[in-house]
Length: 261
Length: 282
View (cartoon, each protein chain N blue to C red):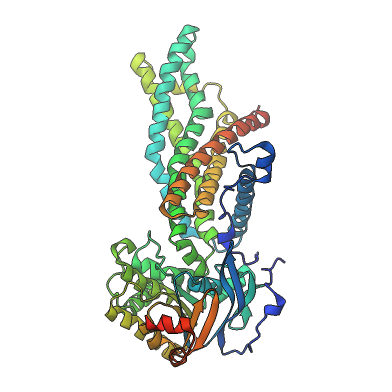
């Protein structure tokens, strides 16, 4: 039986793998041609926690999320999701892991041939076949209310602004009630009120559902509001991990410069 | 069947080699990228393998399949009917003049029927549908690729090969013979009409004369060979669409290459299939 190749044996988790750890990124390397994007990145997010990943554009933040969901494979290192190493998983096993994760893409990635309601209902149709059509419709309506987009079921994605598409993308990511949420720039393109609503939703999901979230963001205000921990990436490395207070008290010149803006 | 986790993005996403390869250096840089040529076939083979694996594992995406039957099939009917009708008219006019030269005008109905049903109908249907459907599928999947919609499908734990590729290829395979029948019908009717305008002949007489001595072996294999055309069109346009990179320009390239390569391989396949049909059904 073929299996996905193990990355490296010595990159197996150097941090204790407990059942509380939702996502563990262990010493991950990733390059695209000559360009090294991630250079030995290690991160950990526990169930019920939110980690904000910050950094300049092009430092591999989105690549990190893609590695965690398995859309891209690391050149070395391992990704462990709720105790399961993505390396060595068969496709059906990876699918099982993915059903526990919700992913919001940077540009929402809505299916442009489907309506808003069909977009959100898409994962339900495939993975919740026991739900009746009316139950699925109710769930879609509920999710639209949660993201502040009620009444848009029959609109096409092209009729929505970028910020609205982002909200629909978030609703779709929440459709299967995931245990882990990966958000790529969730508040980009949103007005301050909209951003606040998304922040409140992420906090609510953490508190009510013990959802683990990894949020890639440039929005420092949002990061401070929602994140339990922050990680700052620079040149492929995590240069600091901790609370906002830890970042504020850092004497690293890059951290100081990043926060000053 | 359980398959190893593979990043579908890695399949067919490198494109053709752009720099002179070792083989290019040996043969001289002719602008024909030898490595790229073989690489393309290699990647197509991997793509086909991924598609077959997805196709034989449940669940089958019936809803998408039915949607594609409509998109590829029923929406191609007007175009195929028009193309078939035009072929019938042209064949009738050309054959009439040339058969008269040899004193064989009486053979005109048979000449039209056999020409349309045995070759012109199938190949014209294949090329016309290859143009319309190939461009459509190539552009659609390319657009989905560059806007990360295919990634979103995969991130939702849905196999994009099963949802997008298998459904389209199967729809093309099923629909091409049916569209060929439509094209043949229009070609034969318009062939009769063109002849009827020149001399009095009823449709019944035309059909009787045209199909005289014909057997199923003469007509069914050429019609069913279009299922192979459908496979080629579906496979190549899905492949070109899903390996797209480069934004809007990439979408345009994918649509163009889908049409060009589908048409090329349909014509090449026709050569092989005609020979096979002549051997198997002499």
